[in-house]
Image (cartoon, rainbow, N blue to C red; front, side):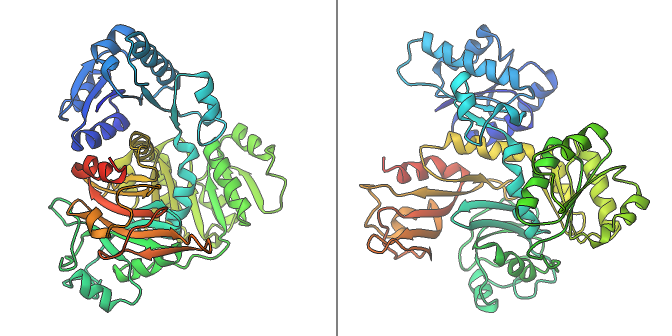
Length: 470
């Protein structure tokens, strides 16, 4: 499969690296010499050119591609280049339609998460807008603050990645099977990244070493605390209806406030920008006693003390600058807020930010990378998550449609050294009741089963062939 990517920034390079690891034929095109230089470290073809120019896209051989991804920093460039790429393929007389995927920054261009309106009037077949996707990721992650990543597999199944501290007596030095026996209700581990080593999918005899990053496959957010305690962390209590303080009445900050208000939470929003504060006050959800909108400096300690900052359970920084977000979150921690959250652009800064107290940071760019990859792999219906903190491991879900060749076979036949199945979501054909089963090798696969599984990036193409029945 040939894939052309317009834009060699963090998102474009991240997608290119993942797809190249799968053995895909990848081309990156960008005008920026710095981005081009960084992209040359990847094992992909790099073209210095303009993704809005027909001749440059043709030099990148988009006419021979199956997928075109527009991942630049500007929405207008992404939309124009998608339309142009589709036209080039059409003019070339190709029988197969080009899949176009665009990163969209302005959420107002998209009426819903599926991007159906944008698809109708532009050349974008799949739109990925991180601001429409990060809020739920952030809210779930804050329930497991101190975790490195929390990713949804669907049906309330999650990938929870945490660092195993040296104080985790029930895990350190034990095999995975022994850990299961030592800790009641401990979810299973399907990915490990040991310090200084490559990540891998473990087996029951794998021994856990200190400071490893481990990926648990778990059902229900109520298990997050159990995982953190087992890994040596001391997570703060998370109330049913936490009191929230949000720094920044940006468009994203307003949407976060709206989401928590819909959950029945009390929300305080502090905005240094008077215009944004007025927009929040005039919004359709602001007419409630549960919302306090304050115009002021988020770093003013006198103002924060006046607002009883330490009586808030969670502080979330949703400013437009990554460094300002980190500074505000650190300040809130010092003033006694037990849990802090951040929405950042830069993926590496998000990893650094997670070291601030009991915190959880979401990177817009990492979210964009994951959802772009999900569209690329849409032949397999379900979720697709590249574990950024445990590189080269993918968590994904897949549905076994009628007449799938794996129906009636054991789980171990599907796995066959390529993947590990964690859960099977099954609906009873007779009663219609749903159940989530912990997978084992001798279980028989049935029609309609939704599988939650893990695989190495390099094996994804072969795993997909099994899952599509081809």
